[in-house]
Length: 520
Image (cartoon, rainbow, N blue to C red; front, side, top):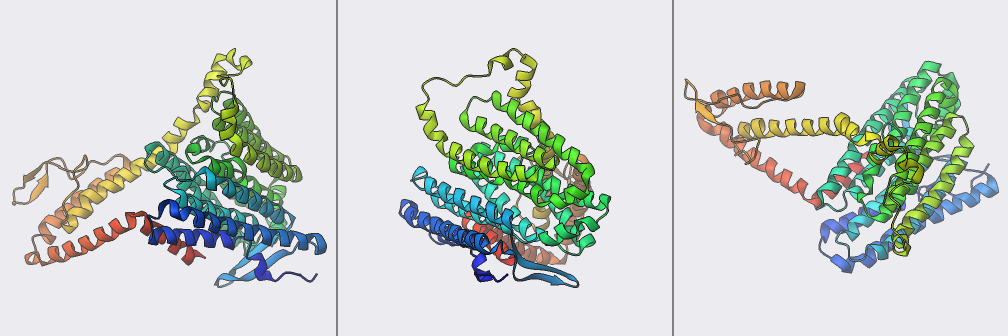
């Protein structure tokens, strides 16, 4: 059937918000102190870009109503190596068009709400840059023609989430919660990458229509392994058990970000991925009971934890978790059309509720009830619901503490090994100022070793530290008349200067944008 729209027209669906994010980011880097004067132009850029995306989606919808859904649109080749080709393609089937329309409408309404809501906020431009990046990421997720392009949008949405949870950078709790969400979602990303690799190995490609058509060719075990990777990604992104702990801490961002990220759009990205993986679920039927039970458990968790919340945003968030659990349950039962309808209706209603939450708090005339009556009569259950079934400390023990320990070990390696190796002074702090004595040959040695390792990685670093320190003192710093040390000093100063520049927000933004350009 002949298409009435040029293929490049469909590229306007995800591209304008991404271009807006790039433009706003460049403006922040080049003119970081414009303040309130830049609010109007920043808002116009973001709103215009999202409106263009909505117009492009509506034109595609009209074409679909008249001639049928465009289906697979190929815009070019992204990666070609040997027999593997990853095209730049869009899947504009009824599911993709429906969710693209949903994303564009909710993001446009949220941006319009955000302009007066965040008036005179210090991070106004940074917020709209991140929100535009998120809009483009979500449009890319729901319209991408293959799993690799979906993963790009998946990662961009994760970066946006991290930046908006930690929007108030001066508050340690905000940055800590942003890190918790970021670390948890990296587990899902690992599953996504595994699924992509297995699709390439067993099916020879990653296009969604090809995956749907050839899923029946896979053995049950193969389909199950591919599906397990996608399930891990979907469960982490949608905060399904056992990954539900991070979403309760994601409310640190401004209310508009809560509306689009965790109330209506990003929290549903995992459900969308499950619906897209329907052919795999129908082949690996042994996993469907697991999906259904996980969804049911998540729904019960969200319902009970929500009953014990005293603030409106937390109550809405746990209600969202319960609804997402029901959508996962529908997928596990094979009711994918019901899951799609539930997703769309819930996204619209939840966005409305989150955006009205600030006004609702002013309309309330009586204090919020601390708990539901019947729950108060069951003290153990109420205690568990109040503590969110202790998922937060469990997640800290399994994810956050090991990550922090790894960071501490890497920092110790930098302070104790790299800086002394190049002759730079060590920073003052708990990791430095080791007591030194003179060895029998006149060299400086640590009384109790250069560093103390914690765990396997820490012990390995401690052993490596002692060997490198011996090498530095006896062969590098005291050999060659000190010329090598001078060369290392110059190199170290250049590296430290580059590190200082990269730590500055404007250079960090430029680095992120350059990375995205290379990826795309």
